[in-house]
Image (cartoon, rainbow, N blue to C red; front, side):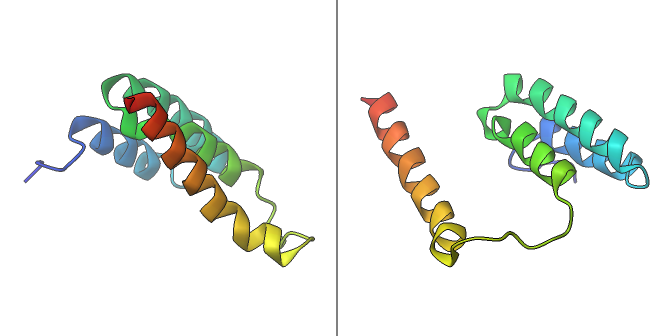
Length: 90
């Protein structure tokens, strides 16, 4: 029943998120800390602390600025990440 792709680290992060679901400050801080600890066990969690920071500082308003920047940033980030992964593998 507990066999998941990322194993114990994923279950740890999910438990932290559930336990602190009522208090956003603790949830984000302890969730980011758990993700940092989990990143030592699995590289799957390397970007998770940055995600917790983005969620913590989100104030609910839609961003002002260029639509190209808003919709183009994600594909560009994926492309750069792919290029870096190819360069690391050699």
